[in-house]
Image (cartoon, rainbow, N blue to C red; front, side, top):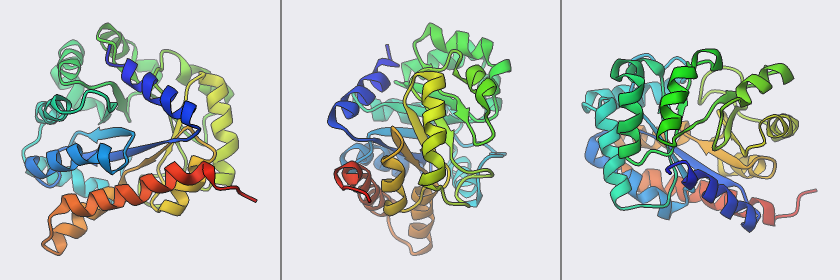
Length: 276
């Protein structure tokens, strides 16, 4: 049961008294081989959970860094099936790290829900985040995912009131992804003081761990969020390292993994430091 990896990882980290660090990377960015090198290096560098984006031509919730990463992934030829093949290669060498697929509904619909769910399960995917699939329309997809024990992970936002949170919580498993700032990824910064009460509301509504993303780019901000949430998600700051490496004609994996180490270390140490 693939979803069990997510539950096991959060249980382990809860016992250790710390939050999870979730690293987001784009499939195929900047090439299939380099993307696989990055993926394989993430757990050792400090990623507790990995979110793997599948390239899409119209990533409406993303800011410029991830938009550009998606275009690089598409240019590298990674379709949905190509991204799943990438996940399968990663899973062949790592049986423990939860792997979450993240993206948009159109490529999933193009495959068909049942075909997609089976292919994702065969590739070792544990969870799915679909940015543009509201709960009211998710029933058939959720049925297909449930049949292969893949978690559908839903998004909550600062505008989600208590009634909406109840709807979001239905048939959600693994964790809930709390979008800390309004707008697209990689633009505004999350604020721990405003995030903390929202995390508590989401946690009470869903009875699940809450991961906070959108607006976390630095080790300092990651540590602040790690003190109030169950997991911290960083994406734009990592794909920006790929872009910077390409601009300076460097290999991207060392730059990305160095950033992951800095962020992971900050999250790991966050709750061991007393705060005033």
